Image (cartoon, rainbow, N blue to C red; front, side):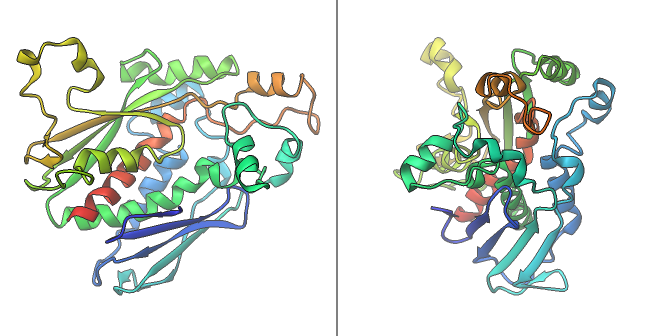
Length: 323
């Protein structure tokens, strides 16, 4: 399925190196003035142009957060459901044209499967695949999620609900001041590294969530685990809680009890794997064969950096279904 939610229904479309990506939002109330500056800011974060206080460090270490961000403006075109920046209550359709689509960079993948990607299983499932940068499996699709999530954030804000995520770990490093250099070190080696994102939810009313199959934490996990490269989700005491006796942590519910919010702050964490396509991996895949005079490599050294606004967007889209 390419649709998330039922009350605020969001459908994304498009491929990484196709003409455009985009989305359709149905169920959005009329009369919301869309904060275009918020959308611009969040898309810049996802693209790697602005990165939660790390901009100065990144410029010093010359980390290439995204090979594509420099030439991909991510300009949103509103096709329906919006008049003069205000929602009409009708289905909202928008698209983001792929300005930096270069499918020729991926010709070598026509008959080759990248390890750690969805290349092979897509072909096994459908009998055909879009080899141009992974097609639908590419993280390029998440730009549409960010746009939809910004609208959901605005609706949540009217109800006093705030969602904020941040990068808290890169590899084994937990000091934000050292994140940029850690990423740069892996980049210099032609490699990549994973990271952990922590998300805080404040202002959620008591009683949000359902007792059995639509538990609040289950819906949050479903939303976040749908993001490319996300490999784990935990809230409250999480996995570390298994090492503690119940008497020490039984009061740490993480803001959720029985699948229902208790009105306190909710904190969850999610882990993102290292980007599987690295210069090292391409050298091995192609047996050091050059493509058009060089190895084609447009992947990120740490995808978790750019996933922060995507985590916020999917969290907002999950919460707005309840409210």
